[in-house]
Length: 454
Image (cartoon, rainbow, N blue to C red; front, top):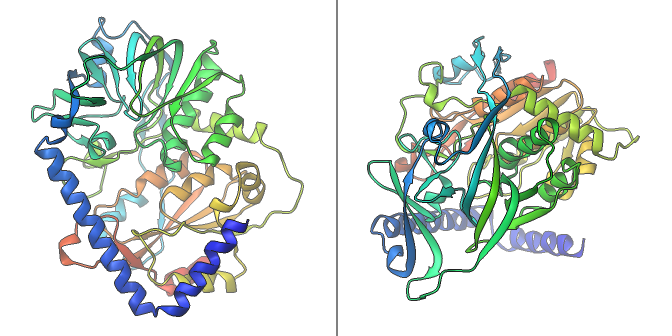
């Protein structure tokens, strides 16, 4: 509490001393420094300078379909949930100015889910802070990852480098090039793989990792050790303790450490939330290009929701019906007229909730009676899993032709909510960043006014 007050005091002094225009200049300068840093990192990796200082391991990269066929790599595979045909609810676009690229969000269509499978790899090698499963000289990254189209977050973090043929990769370890001994390994008998390259992001963890544990509890329930990312956010750790109903032992896969797992269990077919694409696509219409589709298994997510609801502390206190979920301050995807937007919502009696200020039990109590929720598209949308009843969700996003906003609408649909989009006018510091889907934007208050009539 003291730390929070101190931060607020510093912010107040900062705003008093520096004018808005000066603060905006600081923001632009800081943003350009970050872009410059990313360019340095990119070329550092391209030139393979890192390999000079670190030990590297050359591995053959298998796509998931090849993993299922490779009896040497995969010891066992079993379908837990057969993929079904589902019909997601179409979204409603409120903004009149939204580009035609988003009309696909309003279409009714059918799609087939992936089979949810349990895989077993024997004597698997794992490396802390890297989403990679290795057996001898072969490896695979995740069940949805396709090296021809996707970029792994571990490439961005310089943990791996995929070669030009997309069939091999180099894994960089934290061992010093001049050390003659192998890094000591940790041996684990039975492990469930719950590690993700984007696992420290709340939305990615909630959609890619959490459902795997509840599926394992429901369909397998064999005593196992949970293998998770290191240094997860307190809310993720709290949620993990809630859905870990069998109280399995937990091991954090620490950066720079190597782990050998005698029996490694892996759950596939839950979801695919891509980190980034290797090549630009013409538009965001996944009806025309299924490579950019984003899917979620309906049964897995409903089971996750039921597990959370059954195991959190239910509060009897009255919770609001109109909610605005505030977004943590960020350098990208800012709503430039956020003060006007929040003033409008406050005038219309929306209750403001900043998820960073609450634990999982508190968030569940605050959100379980909501009927209408306004939220900016991003990680904060993971909190909508706590909604108890069907609700109207209004998502604020930039009007950008390459934004994969069905990432959000597809999830809300299988959870039973009605999704609305308000598209704001994209703004950028430079014309060169026109392809950047993380641009800042302005929300038209007249569009926002239409929510009162819903």
